[in-house]
Image 1 (cartoon, helix red, strand yellow):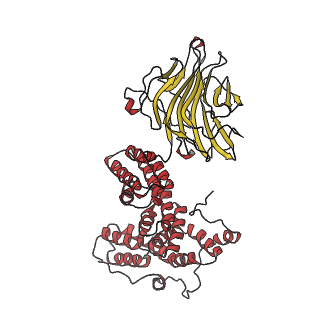
Image 2 (tube, rainbow, N blue to C red; image 1 turned 180 degrees about the horizontal axis):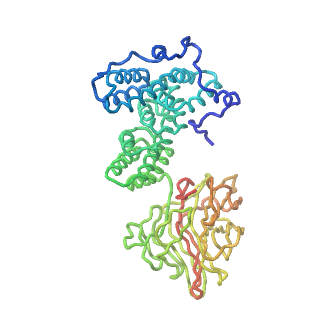
Length: 524
């Protein structure tokens, strides 16, 4: 697994011991902290500023905020003291006193923090590890000076400061990190800053997202696709409004602009994934026309508009709603294979629409298939394809009731799903299927995985079992030469059986086919 460049460094034994100690004034400083503010002022602060002591407390606080943001704690402290001396009866004098106390603490802590920041560029990794751990525990003063380091220090120190702020979940550092990222000319040098923005974006409101979306609109590098995805995810969490729609449009402009940069697969795969996430139909269409990745998601939506993917609640044979990745009409060997208004549900699959079911009188199975608009794995080179689908059989009084996939790819016929009262995959029984229970099947086929041998892997998820950490180990897997060269997966090929005499039915729903697992819509 690729290491996250922003992950905090592992703590060495020495670092663990030393990091618990308070920060100490480093070598190179001969001064000693005293109650005299001039001492701290001389070693850590620029010349003081002048304040109109006759101004309002609002003007004072505005100035203090500016100075504090810039790390000029001694100047802010002195300005507040001067105002306090000249305006002892000011109505907000208690708030001024609290600010003086806070700034006094911060101006005394600042030299230690500044010294630690300089050690972030030390060639000794143990030293860097120690100061990182200490800065993470440095409180408000450290956060402010870390933000200043992000803005002003050389790239290596700025990058380290960014990593620490990310670890601290310092939401107010987002703007500083983003601005530093946009000032870097080489996109690969901006990755650390972009990753931190992604990590902190869930804490940001629409005002913070506005400059990000505006900048992305004209960003010229595919390096920033992960940031575009994160912005889209955050926008989708906010209440829908004209502002949200405008920012989403800016990000989609960036995604579609990738098309003009060349058709290398890596760039376009990432662009398609981001376009799909954004829901931008125009972007999805533009990317799909390049034929870079196959992706189909059949939800059996109910409606009269076939151009919008709608099915009528009737026999599936002859219906041909517009579904990206599919072409031609459905064919079924029996009119009992019908679109049902009620869909299957499963906690790991975002579900919508109806389902496909079968309830032929007296039983008997029905094949149903629809052509894909491409042939998957037709060449001799290795090829991988993923399937996901929901399966349910409402009863097994007719033992042959079923709901499964079936393909003949030149070798033995392969099946997976519910088959004759069992959870079935490639000739293996994975357990007994419970009547009326919906199962999620995820299947991975790898053509020519090992020489001429192909590999299959199947995961089965009953809805009652919680899943953590992704797919995990497959429920079953194996290798065989089941996918011959010259053969391809060119259709959705299903096998369903039910028996209306006993009010029993085989169902399938939420059919997905993709070349990458990450493109499947699963909550895993």
